[in-house]
Image (tube, rainbow, N blue to C red):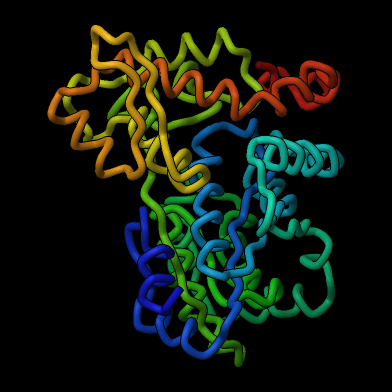
Length: 339
């Protein structure tokens, strides 16, 4: 795979790369660069999180080493429910969900727990150094789309400082995150060089639609907006069947987004089973092929939904079976974690 092919694969399903020229230079000068994505160990893990994490498959195919930061300190600083004494259990839960949701095979990511290095002297000293360089307004702007910020705690202003330093202390060349992370990514590129550290390449993915359609987001606090990675078969079918999926419309269609951001990066193809009188079974080898068929109204929404339900039921089977046997883990974390 040449450099342009690797760039194209990395850019697939992204909204922005800061900067593409730096990405090309990185691939030209380093055969196996590295990237990380952070997951704050706050609430239940659902498909919205898997969509972002699934992008790591493209990076692995492009010869990039991948890391997942289990950001327990970040979680405690941003979520009042994430008590300091519960962080270990939340880390274990989050890692198990991610491991079971995908069949990683080759190119499995390295998991790193934030508190394993974020409480070290050098890291904390750098946090203090950046805090003397940044104004309150600058930190608030950086954190505005990520933390709650209605009545911000001091910890929420420290959040972007820590996320910036994570790039250095995880020893990576790139960071991956949703487009809502952009302010923090720019903050990192501004302040890391002030400490003598290099800027990293920042890669952003789009924010996906809620199952309820435009105007809402996938959130554990919004019923039926998301699917937990261990939801029952019946729950998956019910939520998918009730999801926003207008006939022939691709924009803001969460069902198509699931196929685009999870199925194709992970499996490379997507199969729809349907009766012969409705066209028979059909297999797609790329998302553009699927989208065109759907927008041409040659694929009915219910056939698409049924295929996505079948896929998710099979893909999430290991996680579902594990937490059926270990329901006590979910009960200990709180009612919002229960399927």
